[in-house]
Length: 178
Image 1: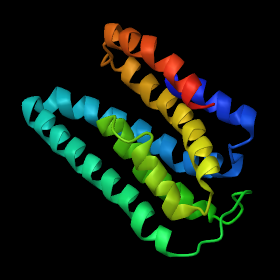
Image 2: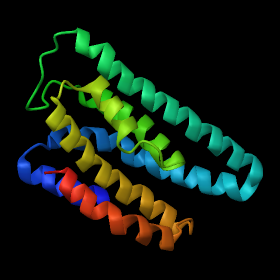
Image 3: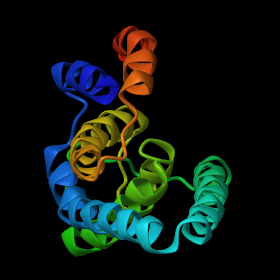
Image 4: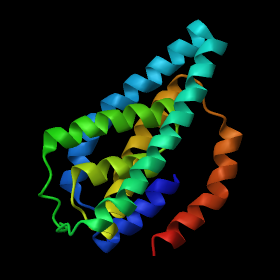
């Protein structure tokens, strides 16, 4: 819900590059569906062992997300990279492949729909920061809808937590997009 509010603000401002959203989602959506189903059945079949694996995966994704953001700050800041406003500088197959990794990681761990996918988009595009954020948010809204749909269908959503988080997050997302 939060991502939709923020992504609509970025869409209104013209900072969403739809070709990048499309190509990234071509990989991330199937990756998210696969991860959602895999985690559900793994938890049902292996219980505590699968939960331990998921906790380790969450930790690994957090570390990887931090490394991707550090790469942005240190490696790319030292290079004079020509930024793109159109997003036409990316290769669709590469973006779809990166998207599949991102979609799987996000749906399996619920970590990184912003940080992790943004790092993957940094690898696959030359978008300036405004378009990177707007494009990532729009893609994140789509990915969240799909991943949440899988988890709702599998019965693994705590609705009271969704309501509590959304009550503060939605106004924050709208203000943050301005």
